[in-house]
Amino acid sequence: MRIIIVIISLLSFSAISQINFFEEYAGVGNDFGQGVIQLEDSSYVITGGSSSFSGGQTDAFLLCIDSMGQYKWSTYFGADESDWGRRVMHIENYGYYVAGYSNSNVGNGFDFYLVKTDDSGIPQWQKYYGGSNWEKVYDAALTRDSGVIMVGDVESEFEGTNAYIVRTDKNGDTLWTRTVATSGEDFARSVTQWNDSIFVVAGQIYVEDSIMNKGLLYCIKDDGTLLWMDSVGVNGNTYFNDVIIWGDTLQGVGAVRMDVNDDWDMWRATYLLADKQLFFPGIHENNLGDYIAEGFAVYGWNNTRIIGQSRLNELSYPGGEDLHFANQNDFLWNVSPNIAWVARDGQDELGEMISTSDGGVMAVGYTSSRIGVFSNWVFAMKFGPNNAIPWQDEVGPVLPLVGQNELNLIAGISIYPNPVEEQLTLRSEKSSMLLGTITDIAGNEVSTFLLEGNLKLNISNLSSGIYIIRLFDPETGAVFSDRITKL
Image 1 (cartoon, helix red, strand yellow):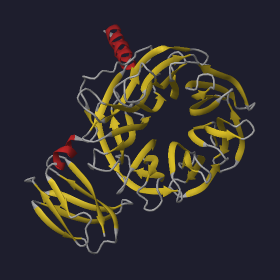
Image 2 (cartoon, rainbow, N blue to C red):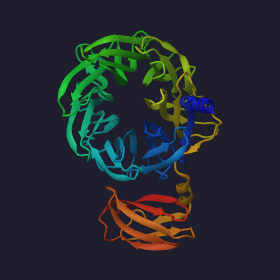
Image 3 (spheres, one colour):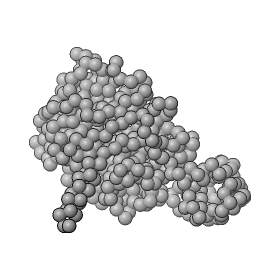
Image 4 (cartoon, rainbow, N blue to C red):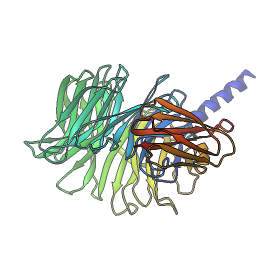
């Protein structure tokens, strides 16, 4: 009997370790996957931007799926304009940080944007960082004191952009900022931790004496001390999209543009951090259009890498780039043929790739123009170990991005006028009584009420600003939320 139990256990473990899937998540609007983390229970939390929650402007969101890719819960946040989540970070029993960008901070264009939620995804506060120029976050990382480093770009005083870095404490208060600025195009696309207190930021920097763009490496301590900066590349314009650190070796992928063919080719490089020198400036040449490495992750079962590449050539589906995945050895020497792809009419794009606890890889992004549907959907693509490769098609089921409970209630609730000055009218088609709360944008509860049928709510005592109305049905567990503007 013991032998049978052992065999069954081994078979169960083997099945679990081979988990692979391709799933899509959508609402009624356009939905974009941008970042992902894996939690300790092997579930995943995805962030991005979506117009499906509020039915108009883009909201930042959190979507939690289980280890098999099935929907668990989702929530959203933002204000009146466009709010995007780019990266999500989690501290157990403390909550989530979502880093992205937003133009809801009136008068400033896009700003760096940081939201703190509890473990259920309910926002506790959100803050903006930047000035009158546009600032956009592309990557972020937690620091040892539970703060956040966000990297991206800011509009340059000349033209184009400068690389921009913001460091906050755990409460979202700014500790320091750094800008990398030349007379050309500079930006940051990736940040990764080297040790407890040192981070390496990667992107692009313009090199004056060569009149070319090179890959930027910017090594900085979490207290803001710059340790060193380097520009690396080959004979052409190069930049990093994503980097990982393996011991004291940094590996990065991105793109290079050579004058000989005037298109973008995938670029990959190995850099020795301790020696501060480029070890392997590898190039993947292809003359059939643009091949750009957007991200990569360690494929743990044999210590290789999976690289996600955007491709645009005469073989691509019409309307935008396709997304292809290739396997590469651990030092980025050789690239294998494609092992998987996401290819639709329209733009298909990678948001982020991470290694998973079972030795696999998770990739998230968005697809477009599925058969008969002309909108963007979030995708999650889980590569299982031992070459357990998922298959994507255009006929499988689409999973919810907005929770079914929310969808059920959204159809039966009316709240008006919005914006509102003094009196808010709420109407419910539900026969049961709903519990209601109003919170300010920082998550502070300012009012509670009961809704059964119709209700006129006097909110003249509230200050001008953005507020969140939430309704809860105690009989079904269904929820509803919406934003109002108090004039």
